Structure formats: C-alpha cells, structure tokens
Length: 253
Image (cartoon, rainbow, N blue to C red):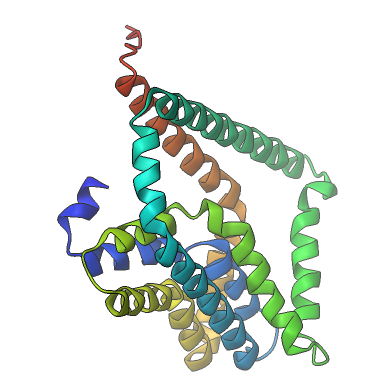
C-alpha cells in the first residue's frame, strides 16, 4: 500500500488492475476457452469478457457511490479496541484458511501422484463444462451466466480490486472522473485475456502449445497461490493488530 500511494492514481490503479487480470474469472476461464480444439470462438469469448467487464464496472459504481461513509465508519471502528481485535481475528482466520487450502492442495497433489483418478475430477468437469459452453446450441444467456457466476464468487476475495476501489473513492476528484477511471480499471483487467485472444487468432499454430502450458500451470498452482495470498495477508493483518494493541510477540532465537 505504501508503494501504491507513491504512484499517481492512474498508475496505481493500472498496476492493481493488471494483478486482477490474472484471476480465474478474468484470465483462467478465458484461457480454457481459447485452447478449446478447433478455431477459437471469438464472439463467445468476447461476450464473456464484455460481461465480466460490465459486472466489475457495475460493482465498482455501487462501491464508489456508497463507499465514502463506509470508509469513515470503518476507520473509526478500526481505531477502537474492538476493531483492532476484529482485525486480529480476521487476520488469524485468513492465515488459518491459507494453511488449510495449502494442506488440501498438498493432499490432492499426493493423491494425483499416486494415481488416484478422483484427484483430477475437477479438471474433467471443467473440460465438460467448456464443451457445453462452446457448443453451437448454447444460448447467449448461458455464456453470460458464467462470468457473472465467476465474478460473484471472486469479487469478495479480490484484494487488489477492493484496494483500488477504496483508493478511487478516496481520491479528490468528481464522480465523472471516478467513473472514467473505473471504466479504465475494468478494461485493464481484461487486457491480458484480450492480448492472448489476439495472439490466438493471429498466430494460432505457434501460440496454442504455450497457451496450453500456461493454462495448465495456472490450474495446477491456483490453490497454492491462493493459499499464499490468504496466508500472507492474514499474517500482515494479525501482526498489525498485535502492534496496535500493544501486544509484544516473543522473538524465537
């Protein structure tokens, strides 16, 4: 956060948006659609990207319109003893959740290495879902439902997005300027997927194999990355709460 505050607001928002652009909803799902056998279904992929962009823009508008009072209330609450204990509890929960996700992922990897077919069930379901989504008879409503579901599932945990919206709400600019920056933020979020779509269309043969490897890496490490994010954020929150409460942690060694 300190680094972000040293940057101009557009640059800080662009940096956060690029991080958000690497999430499951904004990149991994579009990648799975891109590497489907045959020619890429550009209209359906574009419909997906437009839908998730509009979703995050709409959430950002609601967030921006009502966030100022929420920020003030939140600051007052976090400055109180109860708020600091709440932050400590939240940090410890996030830390425990990160460890739990990491343990489950390690167990899944161990089962997969031992040849347990159930460890790969999630991947098979994802491939079947992709086939149905790209089938000729699938309607637009079904395609649009996927990014909406992904956005609803992810938005509460997309820390860069929440930080960016808070910075935007705090900025001393008018509403038109905020909404313009919000629109730019959402466009930058889908920029990695748009660039990969352009590469897939322009040079299908040369980029298909790297895209498959990248998609496989993201799928394999998704749980591990989530575990680290939750664990690090939880640890930082808990440490900050301990400091504000005047609790001195013992130093080992």
